[in-house]
Amino acid sequence: MPARHAVLVSTRCIIIRGGRLLVQRGKKGHYRLPGGRVANSETIIQCLKREMLEELALEIDVRKLLYIIEAFYRGRGKIIHEVGFYFECGADGEPEPQESHIEVLWVDLDETSLAPLRPRVLATVLPYDWRRGWDGTPRYLVSFEDDVR
Image (cartoon, rainbow, N blue to C red):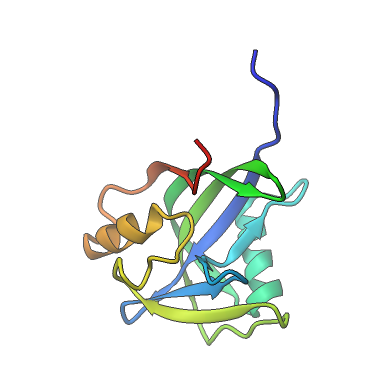
């Protein structure tokens, strides 16, 4: 039997305006969609709404589940296994980062502009699915980052 490991659960927000996607830029220059990890006794929708308020002072309208992504990546010297729920969301107003380390950008919805997006699988599937009006979603995807395999 394989060794047990913890699986992290996260939820992320996909907000698109005028063909541009809201992302957060991390320390290494990678993009992530806004959201975060689910706290104890919290639903994924509650988590998403809380994270958007805490981090970006945005009240969101959660519209549709688009992706469930099982991601494997390296962090803190070990392999992290995370299951993320990605939702199409709407929001009025502009994001206002509430912490100095949070940088937000609106990036074009094309593979070149989204190359720094993590998990990497989103850089190709997200623009494709958006152009098709999210037809075929929700989708289950798996992403192995870097040299995890």
